Amino acid sequence: MQACGVRARPAAPTLEAVAREAKVSRATVSRVVNGSPKVSPDVARAVNAAIAKLNYVPNRAARSLASRTTQAIALVVPEDTTRFFGDPYFAAVVQGIARRLDDSEYLLNLLVATNDPGRKALRYLRSGVVDGALVVSHHEGDDALWEAFDSVPMVFGGRPSHESDDEIYVDVDNVEGGMTGTEHLIAINRHRVGTITGPLDMPAGVDRLEGFRRAMAVAGLPADAVETGDWSVASAVAATRRLLDRVPDLDALFVASDLMATGALSVLRERGRRVPEDVAVVGFDDSPAASSSAIPLTTVHQPSEQMGFEMADLLLRMLAGEAEVPHRNLMPTRLVRRASA
Image (cartoon, rainbow, N blue to C red; front, top):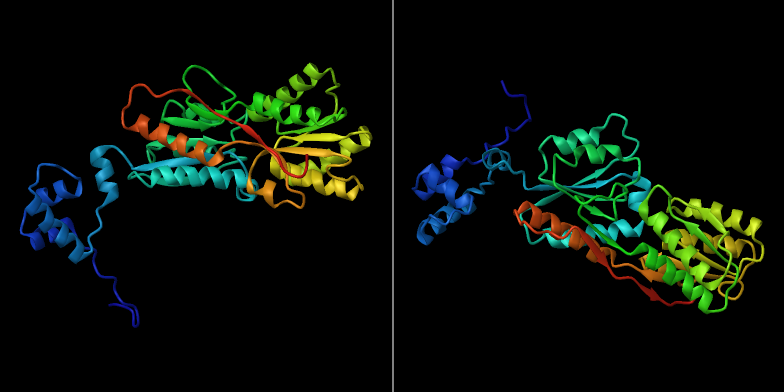
């Protein structure tokens, strides 16, 4: 007996119902749904009219079993949710990925996975529920990703820490970008230049620091004013305070991300140091944080949205069976001058 006030949900239309409406066989409806060319235009029109009339939705799970594909891609971010939703870099990358997938049949599944002792991410990638994975912001200790590497096609955003001949990635030349930002500070006659790095368990953090050191070495300047951050505002606030305590004559700062640079600006204001008169600041990313900060940031531009687009494009080419997909895909950086330097 049905409970009072509860209305039974109407049964979803089936493939058989569409076939009856269109007066064709079930197999013909299946061919139309799957885009087979072996159906005449008149029959295809009749089937599509029946689909529209009945509001039939193809069973994606059944089609996946038949084709052994899921039409789904995972975006794997080995970070906590605070950083993912708080850093504009991720928003730009996701926007680029979505723009590329708009022209495909693939759906994007988001997997924000950090502190994963149960290795849920590994089980998910190995389970067959996605056809491929895009990985951004990976760290040196993200071993589960490498265990899944042979189970599902992957494209990395950023040079992998386990780089070999097999990985496919999209990145910028972070060493060159670090040099560009630091060289600009040296060119405007700053001599006590410091840096706040990204995490040193990530190639981007290591490479931007290397660029800083190379530029300082060429200029014959000391490269000892270094503090480490983790891409967050809070880490940059703490790092800038340590740096100013240790190097009171600091007159310039290259910061490995715009978001961290905004934290550095707040500490400089707190300490009464004028920007750029007393301390010039250069960031990295050219994200919305650079143009919207209290003092607009001079920064090293990286094309984050286009990087996301290229990552998705490379993965789709792999899934389509393309034999020659380029493995190392580097995009250009450039300096964008604003008020902070």
